[in-house]
Amino acid sequence: MTRNEAKSKALRSDGTEMKTMGMNGEKLTVDIKLKGLKDVKETTKAFRKLNQELEKTIQLVERLDDLN
Image 1 (cartoon, rainbow, N blue to C red):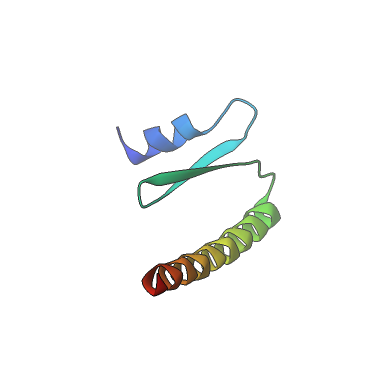
Image 2 (image 1 turned 45 degrees about the horizontal axis):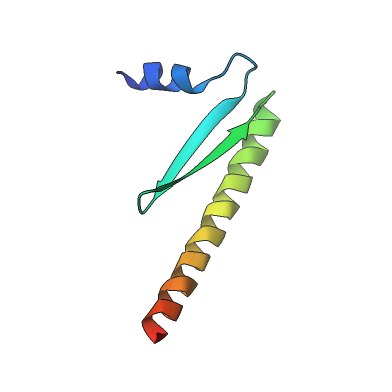
């Protein structure tokens, strides 16, 4: 399956795109619907911020695990 085929399969008929992100074997699925470049930019910023917060949380959990 090519990259374009995989991307087209992730698009639903209502225009909602399904994103799946994996982390240590676990997956988080987020449904988003974009209607223009402004939405894309805002969504990209939001996902970057979410990713940063997740990384901070993972680091904190790892530190707590090390303390136990």
